[in-house]
Length: 121
Image (cartoon, rainbow, N blue to C red; front, side, top):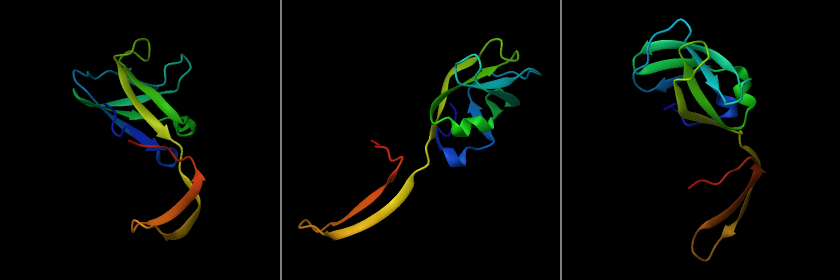
């Protein structure tokens, strides 16, 4: 798992904590963000057999959408964790908030307009 599962593009941290099991310390420990051969990689820091900290490449902040996160013990030749992911969300922009009037059901209706809104469940 890579907490948090989603991050706003304006709040991408410099490190992500990867949790799992049976991690081992290695001088060649690295993290990869994405699945393409040229996806950005970063150094990783072994914390314990269940925790590794991955440095986050700055380019990740401009990569809106999901990104696979994988760990490698041998400098990226093979990946030991490939099922984790983090999603970078575009920052929401609010342009206007308009207050209409109270509805017959007693609720106040407002309209918010802007960019990068998404539906949630």
